[in-house]
Structure formats: structure tokens, C-alpha cells
Length: 115
Ligand SMILES: [Zn+2]
Image 1 (tube, protein in one colour):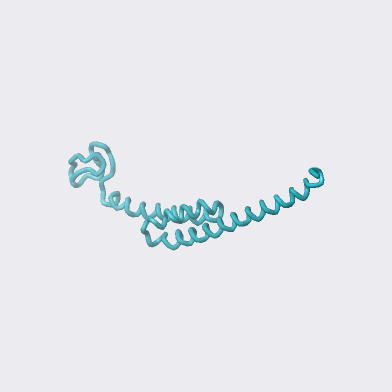
Image 2 (cartoon, rainbow, N blue to C red; image 1 turned 30 degrees about the vertical axis):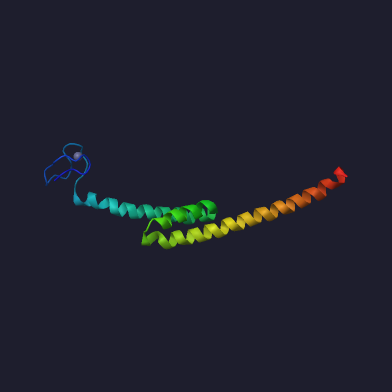
């Protein structure tokens, strides 16, 4: 067979490549598929965490996770996108209301000194 790391021909029974030393057993070749699903889980977990800590970022990570078609993390990414989106809208609305109140308060507070 051929080494998947360096591409050189090595004996079929060898567990490690004699040229670069990378493992060539079947377990090692199965790892990339399982690790890719773990990456999606990490993304979905990051998305749901960030959707509460930093809602716009969580919404963005959730959208990225949704673009990656994986059934295990799909619902979590969708939830974090919705939660992150709603929370970012709520924060934006709160900031706007707060700024309006602050502006009105500051004009009322400073008006005696100005006039
Ligand atoms: Zn090799």
C-alpha cells in the first residue's frame, strides 16, 4: 500500500510508515471522519455558548454551522442562530432605548445651564 501522508510505497503489514513515521493502520484512516463530526459539534457548542455571551457572534457561528450539513449539530446551530439573533436584536433595541433616554436626560439635565 501507499502512505497517506507522504505517498511512498510501504509494506501492507506495517503499522507505521517507514519513511515519515505516520500511522497507517485502519483506525488512523477512520479518524478524520469522526474528528470532522467532532469539529461540527465544537462549532455548535461554541455557537450556543456565544449566542448567550456574544449574541451577534453566536448567531454568526450558528449560521456557519448550519452551512455545514451535519445532522448532529444542525439543531443546536439553528437554535443558537435564533437565540443569538433574538438576543442581538434585544440588545440593539435596548441600546437604542437607552441612548434615547440618555439623550433626553442629558438635554433636560444640561438645559438649565445652557439657557
Ligand atoms: Zn509516509
